[in-house]
Image (cartoon, rainbow, N blue to C red; front, side):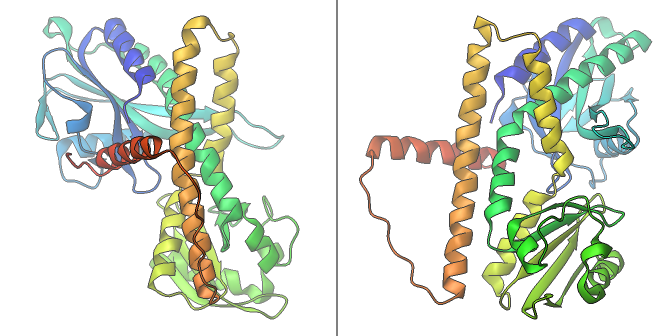
Length: 365
């Protein structure tokens, strides 16, 4: 969905850096691709809906430059025109990482710096090149872009966290060093623990079963095994590595059939966004509110609320589907919930949902 905030931001960047084209892309933690969030071009007819996500595993020159920018947190330039979804981006092209920064919250913590996207500028006005001043300006502006991107995702991550907490499957996210980043209520019950977050998995690992799973994941990327809880109940445990080497653990109380495997995979994709980003969203809100809301900010607030409602609808639907699958697993019948509703509003909601899916999967209505 187009962001008016990022569109206005893009206009300002073009004025400051004196370029004819700009693209702001958000890095998806689910598939490690870059999704367009705002596009502006003074000479080339590039529309946001016509630009496909950038797959950094592609063999194109653009993909290679973007990959290096994301991995090394450095600026990259190209003196040759680049191709973007069939469009040609006139040289020079400047690619800048969008880095979200979180200062230490507790003593002993380190500053977190995480790439959340890239900003591309091309076709410098006056047929000039991007000089050192342009790089400095772009770096400063990319920090503002990071705050905007994280803010755009705030409502979605809040609902993801709500769904994660209530889903009837035990879920845990482990850091690279084996510390538990987050765990839901079902996981705490399975492991017979009242608190799991920030503890090392070795402290709660019953008979080293999780350690064995983690070891297998490091070898092949995913693993499945029978897990016996401290109370003697058998579960099916699935483990999967994320793109940044974190590990997602899922505990199911019955043998997983194809539907449940798809569900676990779906939830796992949602969990690929680390908890630190959610914390960053709250920090970003604080930064945006420091100067106080003005009358002209009403439209922005309305836009944030609209996005929150749409994302909330999607996540609650996911919770309902998960609960229905759980009822089927235990042999319960599903009951129809019959109620009156506004047909016009329902049709509008269908159109909004279809529009969102068309944009997400690059389909044309």
